[in-house]
Length: 159
Image (cartoon, rainbow, N blue to C red; front, side, top):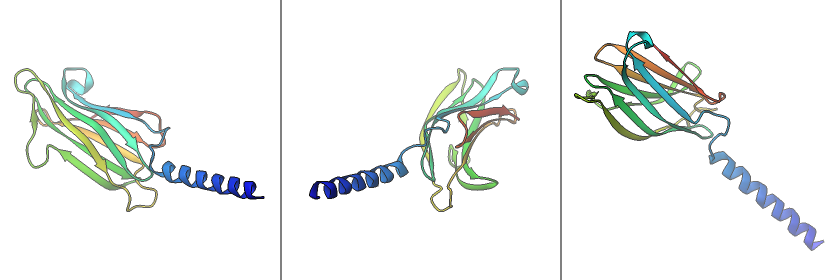
């Protein structure tokens, strides 16, 4: 009888630990990386700017990880990372912050942004989509990476 009670208690504690840890671990089916790029001539020309990084999805929030931004020679731009649920923007970040731009100079340059946390904890269901937009301010172009929690990859496109 004592063994049975101990076994039940062990199972209950194990299930509790799994459920607690399960709430904080990344979702496994969601996309894990993104690339957003703005290319001249509606995608047929030279790369202007791009952002790359990873995605870690949590129960309601998302972190864009190891985000990097590239500006080609003679190009300037910036990147925005926004967490959405349906048509509602939940949280966002713009880099560089303020009114500046990343510029590639004469040879092109990578800029390390790092991790970008997006907090969806105040909304039931949390963030379900991440939209990364790179802006080529030199030629008014934009590139997108649209990533859904329910998808396995991000869709990339240009404007």
